[in-house]
Length: 557
Image (cartoon, rainbow, N blue to C red; front, side):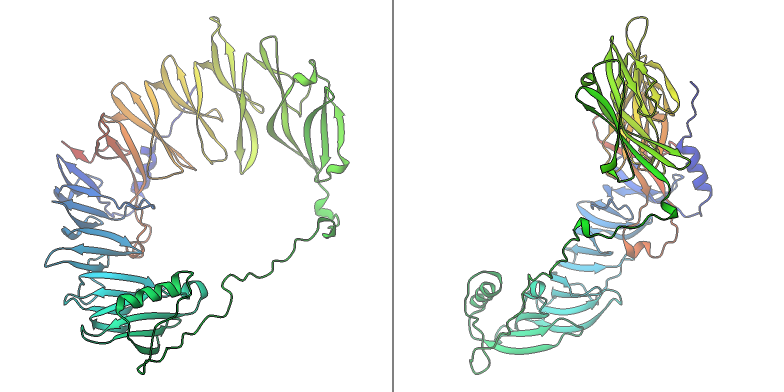
């Protein structure tokens, strides 16, 4: 049988020529050091790092890299060294880069992708932060002079919009019941200086700027107050609230009187017999029939009913050559379009006889399909989400009484001849329900699609699945010919194949590189150029470096 494979290199060449001259920055290894090159191998950053890593995130983003040198981290974006490796940690938070450094003392900062800080100065530590609304965050920080500040920052306009406390000796922030009850109030326990009185202050938080509701002295020790506050709002105990005004009177606490778990009454479902029956109109004149084979009293019947009118089904006995209780009715969907409607069959007949397996399709009861072997499973080929044909794995014994396998279609008859020693289903992906088979012939392996298309001829000494970390909906299969390695890569909508050209085994595939997930980086880019990268490893599993689908390797020893 003839075959034709459109290898990805052709697609990639067309893609390459149709895009702009934008360079793609690819990690490049030279011996034990890492740098950055473009797709042609031209160095953008000479190898000088111990490691280059993509961010370890659930999104598998690769729009920036973390450089590592002597245990410290830096930042690289689009082949440019934004931050040199002098930070103890760098991580992305909603498009901003949080960095920590021990240079000039302990420091923490939040940076934009160009490396500039969103604050006027770095802090020793960002003690806490939380979102007030979509654009505003409340920051509690430890300043370089060991005082604390609390302010609201507009993350869209990139500026402070309100300072609640600045250079205080201590600030304790409580997220009270507001997250459960929607009462928009925040409580702070503050001391201006080390000798100042301990104050408890209450602020609204339903609008910017926040408004202070009240303030009062606190006569208990700070740790005692914290305990009572926690008991009041975070436990089931009913402790008194020890807080006072300047005169020592108990400060009023406004209690929430609504029910936080109240649910609106859901409307009851309308009883089936009370639903409105729509009268038949001209557009409903087509007749759509459902057919189902059943065995009753050791006889085979075809039950048929129009549309949803199951109560008025028609039953017809189907003659068979063996007792009906020896028949297996297997699931299978067969859709036949007619001039005035359609027929939809839900199962088919299967039974053994004289060492053979026989299949009879429900729409053609008088025709028997007979083989030495017919697999229990059937494979539906779809077109625009509708079943186009059903394919079966079938077998026929050769002159040595050995089974040889092929594919049979209910619509096109024999689509793959009996020439394969093994036929194993390896992948079902949602490209209109297409299945793939790993086939073996004369100790060589290949890949055939369930519709009969030969993706890889059986010329390869090995074919095995490779675990791919980058996409849950993809699969990678390594193919081998002698000492060379290639791959077949499957997504939900496409198949890419590359004949064995590499000296190293396949570790995985990055299907889209770079893939921008950081909105602060991607917002300035329109239709960015991307490629696919292949990860290669040595025989022990150690990562060697990257290659593209043209076979170019971005590493050397």
